[in-house]
Image 1 (tube, rainbow, N blue to C red):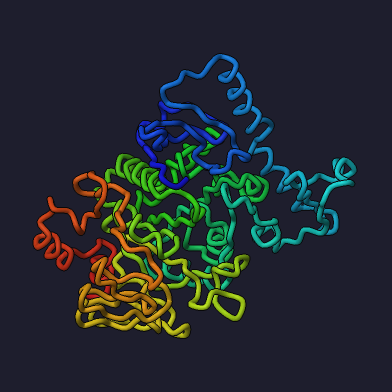
Image 2: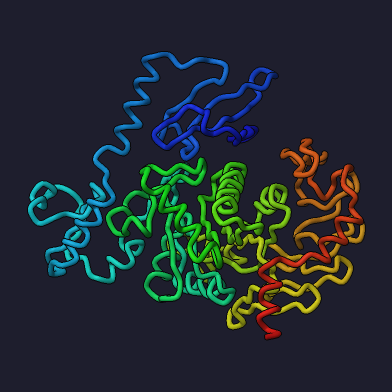
Length: 456
């Protein structure tokens, strides 16, 4: 939704659709801002048609219709019952285990004859039960729950990052492969998967899975809320981490709002003063949006590869410069070691691991490459830019050679002053010398913890 703003506060007061509380959006209509409510999870009206102008009251017939749709969406779903069916089917010989892809459910032998015209699969092995993401058909609605799944190498690398940093209690939001890998390989780690894909209700028990909408922090089944609260308090809240792999088309604002909501809940339950460490998987070009809302987050160089998307992987079939997907985190980058055998190297000046094509720029005093190419320094702009960009004297900035001259404004609001049109780093109300000194001095609590462990 280009030119549309999101207002994420007071979600509980917003009208509801089957996917939970709607979001309040704002867009310009005939020269004036108009606010409206729409589904938080679906960007296509074909997936969820809820729409209501904020200044209009919902009539009784519409209200009744949506209440029925909400009830219909969760009707007949009982996670505890699904878990019992799972254990019953696990005790059957592999040849008698059946999954219906049409109905998205495991089938008991007595009900198989009702699905003979459907797309069903026989012979569900133990390995498939342990790794359902490897045999379930990926959801492909690009404007809802578009599902891209990590390669085995990426999965292993990401989990090892968590393990090496002693982050043993992993709240996985939309990352089933990470959840499966931890459950199957690490006895000293625990994991709770939260995902909008309800098919996992058939394969993962209530203590390890919650049917959940990230964009409004909505649990579809009420019992999942208590399990979520209990997980936040595992080991009195120690060694907890949030690992997120949200849909790339999702708006940053509601995700940030959910992160803040979870963080506040964690602090309230555990009496901790520290923020939860977060690993957020997202494309590199979304960096300005993330760091403007979460200025303590840094983007790492690791290229995250996916099995089922040609642009999000390396190799002959992949993008020329490798996957554009990166790690964003509030963990000290010096604590996150990237694999040497994939060409990553350590920059002693920046004190972080960087990609093979990334070179330290002495003028910028930073390793500046972001998109998989080696950036070049522009003295006029006093910063490094993409190698294909040229300096435009008219715009007084570097840009693509075929760009249209004119100022490119930042449309989001400043994290510091809340005014639109600039980022915190350009804010006239910030003491930039003081901020820079704090950034150089500040070390994340994870980093401090690791250094203390080394001195013992």
